[in-house]
Length: 326
Image (cartoon, rainbow, N blue to C red; front, side, top):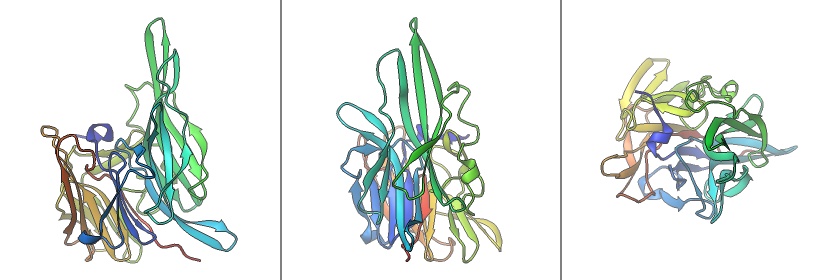
């Protein structure tokens, strides 16, 4: 069974880069660690001011971008939903260190009344860094609603934004024109930018880890695809293993949780996931670490909460970064 993220209510991202591992949860909560060790994980809440949340997208990426003729900067980008007392909107956050985050972009506010509501809903999906065009691309899923003679008509689609530096964004594609009942399983409009080895022409950042030095790719065994509707897994609580592809062939390795995300950096692999019980509404965020190429894993973060607490959820994406260089 292929399962989309609207059903999952999950943690969304794990990342390493600029000297920090990051886990981003379903509702927008962030965890950060400088080395991945259990005692180093710090809960950041929902940056920047506890006024963002998420809905199961995998929007997290990292790249070293050019900020001047001889200057580069490492930057994380993360997509979410922003809100205040009256409105909500899609938003993109940026951070140079994984700890301090700023809102750098907002989509138009969601419209809740009137005969024409554009957008009537917005959800973050995926983000990718295209190292050929040296550009970030971020996908949001938007819906527009028209009401005439008490009849409601909805259309849905992807809206794609791009940025060369992770901080200044502009719209490049708007494809909100589809019947929601027929939409969701087609290819993402970002597909042409899935060019890095970990993307493999099929996935954005935040889902699979790759070590260039050993040409080793590790990803959640239960990860099936990424579509216009977001990531797809084999189940709401997918397989508790990762798949390893290297020169030695392909094999699987067990991890301590249903796995949604893998990341790599500097000889360290991170597998992230957790559980959601639809009967008890018990949530958990879990992270395992491996230093032997994924052959064995040790649990370093296990955060489990009870019903109604939104500070935990399954991890569904991972990204590997690197420190800024001059």
